[in-house]
Picture (cartoon, rainbow, N blue to C red):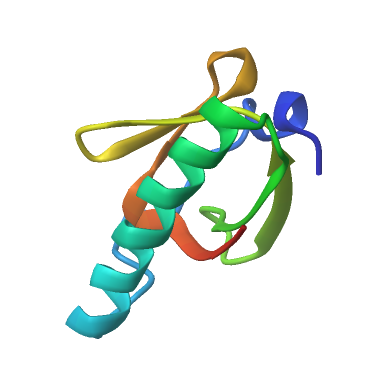
Length: 88
C-alpha cells in the first residue's frame, strides 16, 4: 500500500502489541527509523494494523515521531499503537 492510500484508512484502536518488551523494541526501532530517514532518506518498512483487522505494509523515506503518533511522508499520521513491525 502506498502512503497516499494509507492516509484514507482508519487504524486499530488498541495497542497491537501486548508485551512491554515488544512495545519498547517498537519505540527503539521507530526512533532509529526516524534518524535513518533524516540522515540517509532510506525507505523504512512499517506493518500497520487497520481498523478492519487487516495489516498494511507501507514504505516511507520520511518518518517523524510526535508524541503517540508517527508522521510519514506527505503528512500521513499513524498511531504508534497500530504499528506491528518496523523494518529498517
